[in-house]
Every structure is written in structure tokens, then in C-alpha cells.
Image (cartoon, rainbow, N blue to C red; front, side, top):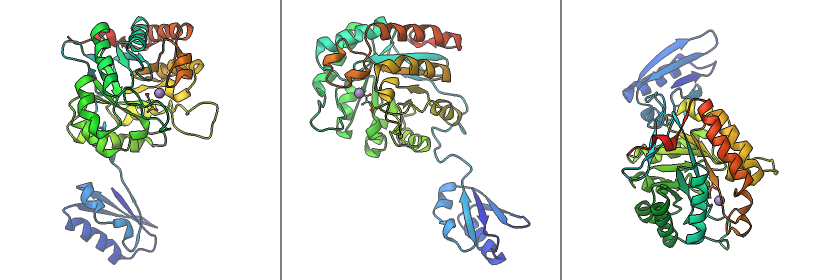
Length: 348
Ligand code: PEP
Ligand code: MN
């Protein structure tokens, strides 16, 4: 942490800052310039926060040098992590050496629709199945998902297809039941800063897919991941799913630069959701190609056997030609960038 003193700060004010820092066990290194004095602090940053240094007379600014997040930061964990998803005997990696293709319906509607979507996903090369049983809908009148019945359908479909399940949990009270059925808990954009839910997910024993809040900065997103990690769960995968901007042609704006930015400061894997980012099926293939090109560790995509009748997000669901195009991009592009398909690295 660095304290920048005002140009007219007095020697007493500088000494007062140093004394307070030393008073909480820190060290203060004063460096006097021609115009300003700056003080470098070494020690426990949280105890410095408690000093409210910014409010002290003569202090112009306080800057932090280290990341505010710790467990998910690359500063203390330089190697990028791999998170394993699935039951013992069939664990799919998400990490820096592989590319993980996740696909499935936005929502679990019926057993047959979920099975059909899962078979489409598998045929297209997906190694994990997505599908929402608890749906966080903007409108309380929209389809809210099948709840526990949906989880049971997902578990049956995992039996039939062998695809481990990624599904959303929207309420801390449901974490236990979701964790009993699913292989990975998704926390959606609307709940990224629901700290009680993050903590409960951190205690669930299951890996967590943490989507970026639609108005969250990267730092806020990583602080949310820190909440999960702090409860002893470092198996967190981040998902860039688009942020709100002034541009109305797409549902959200895919912040593609978030991928390399996150990878430079956090060791956690990061995947991209081109379906919820664009909200349009014609954008899913180009945005997936962009995600692969920028170095994402995977993509998560909506597919549906009958998008016209989908109860949720039909306009972005893939079927037919687009799904074949996506399958081919996912097969061809990652190997050209040195990544192996996650399905080939399943851990037994
Ligand atoms: C979803 O993946 O079904 C979903 C609701 O996504 P998001 O939270 O990104 O809107
Ligand atoms: Mn959706």
C-alpha cells in the first residue's frame, strides 16, 4: 500500500501517519520528493484499512498495490488451476491445457426434452451437460423451472448419457439438494453478489461455476469468487456471459477481453457463455470462435430440440446447421492453439 501525502503536508502529519502504521505492527518507508512525500507500507493490509488513512490530515491518496482478492489471485498461486467436474470415475477437466465444451437446454422442461438436448450436446462433442432446474427469471410470471423434479430428470439423463451435470442454484436453502444431484453448481449473473449463496456454495463440496454479474467489474467478480474460496472451495470456474452496455443489438455485450485479463490476475479457469451474451443464435458460433481464439478454457452453450417451443431463451438455442458449425469450431480450433478436448482427458 502506498500513501501519497499532499504537497503542503507537514512533517508532523507525515510522522503521524508513520506512527499509526507502526502502531498496528506495520512498517512505513518515507520517501521525500521535491514536491510530494510518499510513504510505502509493508505489513497486514487489512489492519491498514482499519486506520482510515485517507481521512488523516495531509494525506492526498492511498493506493493498494496487491490484489484485494487473495485465494483466487495469481500473486500467490502463479500456475493456472484445473477444476475437475463429475463423479468419481468420470471427472472432466476445465483448465489451461484443455478445452471444455458444455451444452444443454437453458431450462429442464420435460424428461424427453432434456434427454434429447443432452443427446444433441453429446453428439456435438460436449463433455458436460448444462440445464436449469431452478431458473432465476427477471419476471416472476415467467417459467421458474421444475425445481427438484428437474434435478431428478438431470440425474437420470446423466445415467443415460454419462454426461456430468452443471445446474444453477438460486437460493442458499437449495444448495444441499442441488449438490446432491449435480456435479457442478452454477451461480448466475443475478446472484453473483449474493454472498450468503456464495458461502453456502463454498461449503457444498461441489465445484462452482460463477457467472459474472451483468454490471460487475472484474475485480468485483473475483471478490465474489473469493467468498466461495474462503469457505474452503477453490474449485471455482468463472464464466464471462456478457455485461450491460448501451448497445441494444445484443442482449448483453460479450466482454471478450475479460478472458485474458482474468487469466493474468487469477489462477481460476474461465469459460465463455456466448448464448446468454448475445441472446441470438446467429451470434453463438462467431462468439464461440472468438472465445476459443482469445484463450477461454471452454464454452457453455444453449441447445434445444425445439427452440420455437422452448420455455426459456429459445431465440439463442442452437439446433441443426448452427450446432454442426459450433461442433466443428470446437473440434478444429482448440487443438490449433495447443489445447486438447476435455473429453479426451477425463480422469477415471
Ligand atoms: C443460464 O445460464 O441459464 C442463465 C440464467 O444465465 P445468466 O445467469 O448468465 O443469465
Ligand atoms: Mn437462459
